[in-house]
Length: 170
View (tube, rainbow, N blue to C red):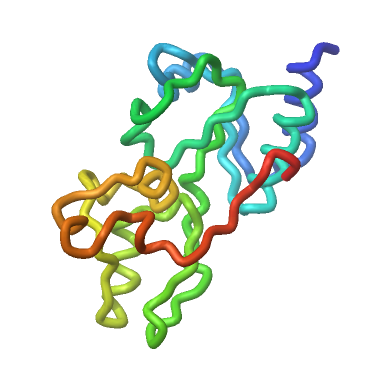
């Protein structure tokens, strides 16, 4: 069994709730600048995401994270995509401290969903990038997407107090 097959077996072994696909018809929907991934993995927890990142690193595979997919051509284009890690099921608001004006959210949460949650407490996030319904918090931070409100309130990255990140070792 080759490295790719071993990686796929390892993915399938842990992926009880994460979606894993290598179906060519589905992969076409995830092309970036003409490059198709070998796998698309859609975890439901950050622990699963960390496991995927660690496995890709262990097998020497390239990994590209994707939020809403609206700005995949921004920044350095990849030379290859072995694993595309889709974050659109990581959508929880983990904590919202309204008195402190802070919230802790997962990367796949759309800005529109976050704004709706904050609005229940009379709050809003001073961001207005294009396509807020599709743009995820992780994607907005990765691309530093912004709109006119940036001139008054700063960019997305200016509003961040801290981040939890997944490193190559998981």
